[in-house]
Length: 278
Ligand SMILES: [Zn+2]
Image (spheres, rainbow, N blue to C red):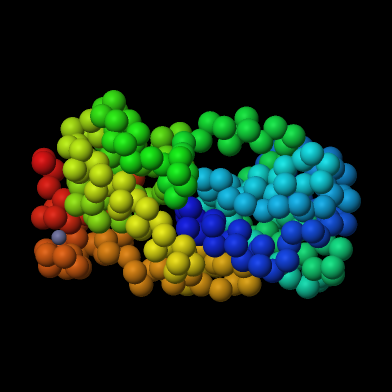
């Protein structure tokens, strides 16, 4: 599932590929729930003629600012992929939205599980305003984070996945950050010492920056795994320390990595480096 580094990679590569400034000449949506509450006809009519003014990321959302005071929010969810390609007559399998552009290319959206969402809105803040701070921005202040953790009686793993607490983290980078900070994912946030909380703050930024530098994590080789625009793979899977390394030796202490379920989420940890109690 694409998380902050994967979505950031998609945004940077679409920007570098010249999506900004392009005019949408035709929009087609083939899977109604993806663009709800608009109908495919309303979606097409509203997008036609709009220019892409900017593209950026907020949490796991791709945010396209359009010319008519409109914003397109795209959430890739489990298996969404975006490609900027030459115009083609035929639609490939699992392509559910196609935006034709004025330079002879198309922005094509493929999603095998179909959980992705495209939301065209005049009021993006209604959704984006509910999200927690961006972990790589100045909003993510260390002192504020430490005092915020003290007030939360939740386990660290579900707390890190809570997008209203902190934006952009999913299963991969939560496990990687907790291993890096040597904290058990089941620890209650309010029990962390200031030193432990500081370690977690540094670790979150470290694993996300590394993920972006490596252009995201592509697990496996199936069509449904994360792909960068153009079908290219990310490289961060080679840099993972704990995620999906069940039974393999911990890279710090050589004890086997354990997989357990915490708050219904598959979680990977080193029981030696990440003890259940401080
Ligand atoms: Zn270890």
